[in-house]
Image (cartoon, rainbow, N blue to C red):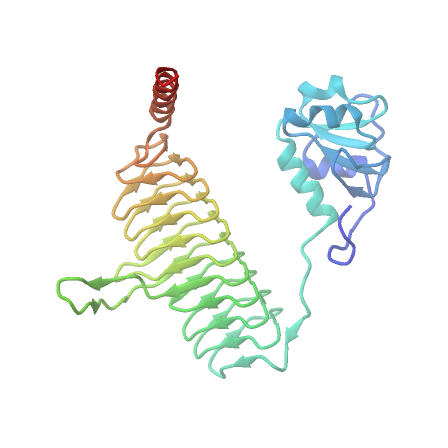
Length: 343
């Protein structure tokens, strides 16, 4: 059960209500009037709680669970404990997200502008927007309706934040346009100057970074992410992309729709990620490359050339993942052979 000091539960719900929320089907014999008080992991859930099974490695916990109900794929329903009600769906993790969101809806901050916030008279603050203590909003900035601006956020001159977006504590925004319903978590740095300078002499000369960062709607940006503004062209993050904590995105990068960038990954300047590209943790992508639609990069890999659409790569330098695994197997055989030779 979630700690009530931090999370306020909105239940209870009837099982039939949860089935509608989850877009799931009740199993035969399940009582739609059964009261469910909360969500909980299968191994600790009790009779008034609902859990979920999305990975077969947790099948033993499912079989032994005391949960009153569970969200599962239909192929596992025969292994449910006797008396457990089931919500059946082929996408149990998505269904759980919908159910958990019903029990724990988004919490709104304190309405209005805190008196310690520093807001330029020329800025525009939309109706229903909440501004927390010590936030700073610069000249000609535009903040949409029903936004949340966290404590100590700095929004510099001219920045636009779309309706319904949330900016976490301590984030800084400059030279950027933020779309609707975005989540920018604590400590993110968006719009800083790109890393561009001339190295043609002993004295480096900074190249003016004259572009912006443009973030479209429904984008999530994790804590302490840094996204540099463009040198001339804009840095672009398109609709629905999810960026984990501690990711670095260089100037002029274009990130397509629905991409996923996992923690500590980095993309160097002027690289393009087409729609639904995924970078696993600590993956690095060199500059001026293109990763095609649906390409994936394994964790700790270094991409040094273009990746065709739909191809998964790994290693350093990154190559098609199957080829990389063949190389690893070959290295292991060689090492074993050397070991026997030294005996």
